[in-house]
Image: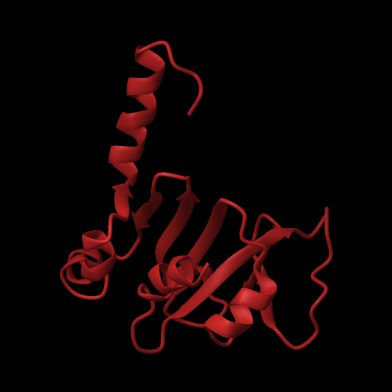
Length: 143
C-alpha cells in the first residue's frame, strides 16, 4: 500500500491536491468529519487526505482506485489528471488521463521515473482503449 500511495502522490506538484473517490452520495454518506471532501456534478464524493499516513487509514486499498489531481481545491474545472490504479499480483498499472496537456511528460521524466524503473506500467487513455479493443478482437472478455 505504501508503494501505491507513493505512486499516486508523485502526481501532486506544488499546491496540487490529490483526491480519492469515496463513492456516490446517493448510495453512501461520507463518514469522516475532519477530512476535506466535496461532491461533484454527478454526486461522486471526493476526499483529500492531508498526507500519506492519513490516506492509509482512510483508503480501503483492494485493487482499484480512482483519483484526481486538482490545481485548485475542490474545483473540478482545475483538474490536471484522472488516475485509475489497478493492482494485480504481477504488476501495478496506472491509467492516466491528462486533462492539462503538457505536464505529464515532465512527470514521466522526473517524479514517475523511479516507479517506471520498478515495473509500474503507465497506460494513457488511448493505450488503455487499444488494449481493451485488442482483448475484445481476440475473443477475450476477461479484462
